[in-house]
Length: 136
Ligand SMILES: [Ca+2]
Image (cartoon, rainbow, N blue to C red):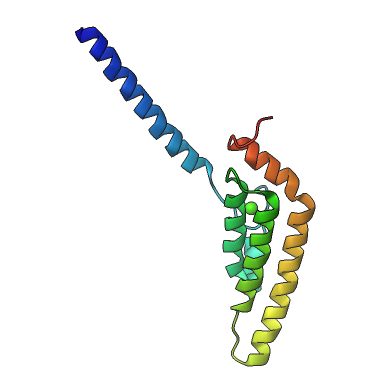
């Protein structure tokens, strides 16, 4: 009798530990790596031209690709909206300077979006596989 209850307790403990481990490693695996696929990124370049605030859009986009149930299209759309909104918040000493900065930023944002649009499906599929969302 004692042995059975001990076994049950042990099984319960193991189940709990594996759940905690799974949640913990899941959290650890979800890491955004800025604007770029990981082996390179252009965060430093963006900061250099005063567009470092775009990096948060890239990180949100990375995490979106890692999320089961999110489609690539919805992640990419959110990314485009984020880039546009973030560029719209750039300010300058003068209104014309703010306009120049925002236009330049939107142009860079478009380039970023085009890159994602061109090579995104590979990144999306590998991220979804890595997080167990799709098999393969
Ligand atoms: Ca990235």
